[in-house]
Image 1: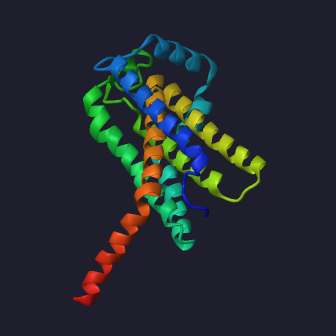
Image 2 (image 1 turned 180 degrees about the vertical axis):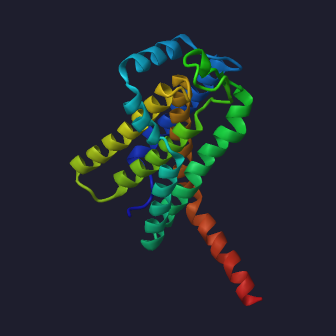
Image 3 (image 1 turned 30 degrees about the vertical axis):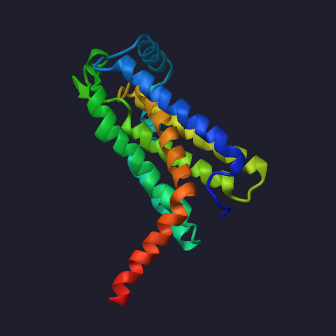
Length: 229
């Protein structure tokens, strides 16, 4: 695995992506603060309901399962540790954890947005509270962005990289559509989650590139102290 995680020529675009992602999260959070649906959400709900059947909706919902993302990340960490790609292992662990912590412990309590799917389908819950940003979509997007970084740093041919990134983008989009069509989240919840995941994974990757070697040195020194004692 080439090092660092973010090649020099891509650091500028990654920083720009982090900035845009944070701007999207903050802007949408301000719009939906303590609120319900927006006109865009209403339009997207109607379109998905009219054009996606229940069977397809059920299949799409499985794509956002946190279990699938966790399995992918565990396999990636195991492979990275086997190959001694410690920066990849650190990214696969710290990146998604940072994104989910920001969603569940910071943004959801602050924004306090509620979803009322029973207004659309009487068989659904009366209210789902704290839905912005989507934790399910954030997990998928964080996992996909980690994999994109890994794919782009592997010695693969350009067509293979493009194909892999396309598949990962399709996974992000399809899981978001499934969450919206099944009335688990507003569309803007999923957009905010993708923006936060892009910002979070980008920041963690840049941080590992900048401070990873120093942190590893500190850990090695701390490990040797008990041995001497």
